[in-house]
Length: 115
Image 1 (spheres, rainbow, N blue to C red):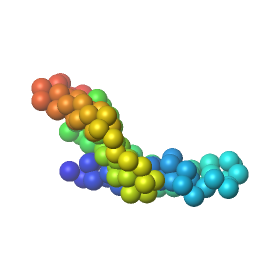
Image 2: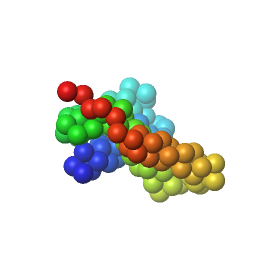
Image 3: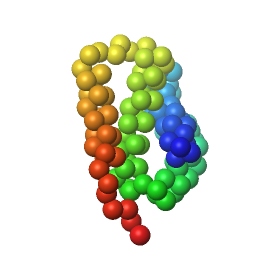
Image 4: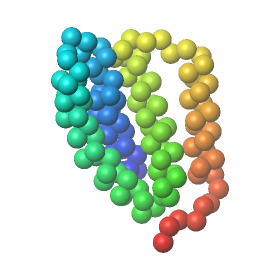
């Protein structure tokens, strides 16, 4: 559970690092947007690296990546709707549902964990 929580927290920071400047940073020069984004991304890395280390004790690398992608999309949906004020269209919901099926298939069958 701590892995998923850390991944959620890290993704919140990464989403703001990657996309936050789209709403307020248009007047910034590109170098400033990159510098601010990298500063925010440093916090993301400080959360993501422990999340993956903790998770790798119980999950495969494939499972960690699939969880990461599902978490990323969940965080981004909330971010896009609330922060960017974008409309959540039906095709995005279908796409998200298909990714949730990917998560199901990644965990529904036992795979051999690394030694």
